[in-house]
Image (cartoon, rainbow, N blue to C red; front, side, top):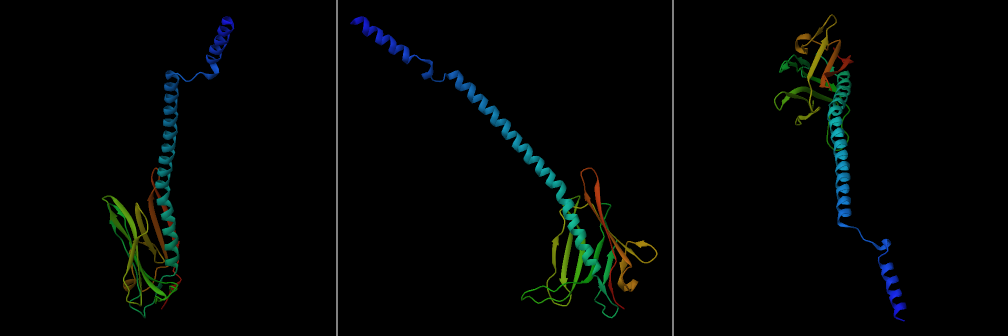
Length: 219
């Protein structure tokens, strides 16, 4: 009887000591924790590398996108430039300037535009002014200012680009390209206008150029 009891106790201890019910040792937990930390560090490092690369790509491409938008806007507005000698307030002026040795032309003209919809009154002619402005030392931005020509409204100015390397406006007088123009002296619009906007590329400045023929010259 005693021998059977001992055999049952021995079998119970064997079942309890079975490897299937064994827990993790401290060493195994430490190894798993180290692997988890290494894996997490690798994942976070990859994530932040991708984010930095994305941010750097955005910083490189955003000035190029702004330059394309600015050139398209200039092309449309210059094509609608309007001047006639019967109205002395109408004008087309290009001033040859530079900032830090970089071209920084000032373009000031009147142009036809679509009147604004809504309850705010507006005319179909506006005065437009493009001017490079110094920003943070050696940087320039291109500012655009508009004002309704016939209504007493406050001029609206805002930056059109984040950073530029140069803004050059040239006028064709029928014989050559010149960097200055004034309708009070030239008594008319130029035959064509060439606008070059320089922005910083990955290695060197990238130029965006538009040649526009004003179509609304009057007598």
